[in-house]
Every structure is written in C-alpha cells, then in structure tokens.
Image 1: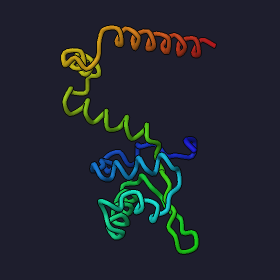
Image 2: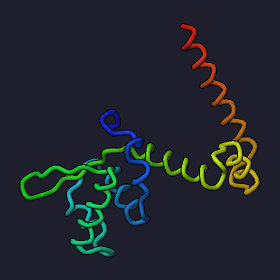
Image 3: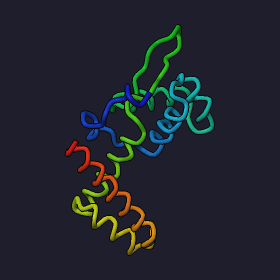
Length: 140
C-alpha cells in the first residue's frame, strides 16, 4: 500500500489536520479502506453522520484521502502514508520553533529532559551507519 501512496510535497501546506481530523486519519490508516459508515460507527459518541461526512470531505480536500463509490457506499482510503504526514508536521515544528535547525530541536529535547544522552548516542550511531552506507553506495 505504501508504494501507491503520494508524498506530501503537493499537499503539505494544506495538510494541517485538526485534532479530530487526525483521529479520523489514524482510524483510516489503521484500517486501510473504510466506509463513511464505519467511521461514523467508530466516532458515533462524538459526531453525527453528517459531521463524519463533513470531516471526511475536509480531509479529502486536503489531499490526504480519496474515495470511490461502491454501490451506495463511499469507501475512503489514504493517499498519503502516516509517516509522511508525521515528518511534515515535525518539519513545521522545527521550522517554527527551532529556526529550521534539527540540532536545536535535539538540544531542546535534552534540555527539556524529553530524551537522554544514551538515546542520542544510539541515534548518532544510526546516522553514522546511514552516512557510511550512502558513501559506499556512491562509490559502487
């Protein structure tokens, strides 16, 4: 499924999701293909049927969902992988609060005690291995 999903490049600017839209997208990503009725069933305690359909249309307008009609039902599926949306959201945070600097973000994580030196060392090792693999790939 992931290989058929779009990248965020064409939709990043309009793909900011409200908390409720995010919950609906998480439901769609978990299930892959869902009907509007299935979404309504999942969120019935918080949204009526018309609200569910409005949310689905909004998310579709943002370029994250597509739908097909199967009989009388609209079937929705993601156009963008969850990881792509997460990376786009993280990039917006980095740009807004850390002047585009991943280094400043990592320092902020340490200062806020949201991670520790051990985790950052493991990340550093992973980055080094990826860089080595990239260099080896260019030589070959």
